[in-house]
Image 1 (cartoon, rainbow, N blue to C red):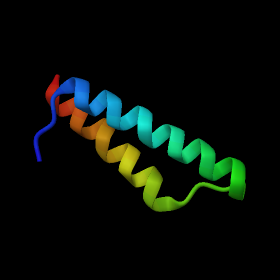
Image 2 (cartoon, rainbow, N blue to C red):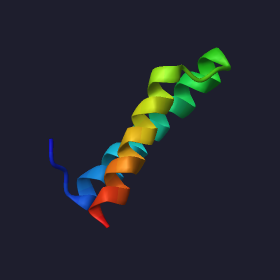
Image 3 (spheres, rainbow, N blue to C red):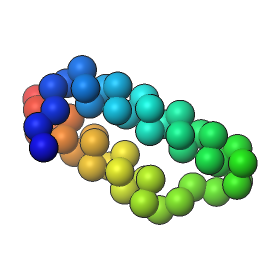
Length: 48
């Protein structure tokens, strides 16, 4: 999948909000969401 930089930024914001809500509710961060954020950051790095 190829994303534009804008799409990646939006996706990251969305995921971070989801993570924040999840953490508020459950007081912990699921590993898979962390991995998704890492993947997005890797994608952003590769775009530079």
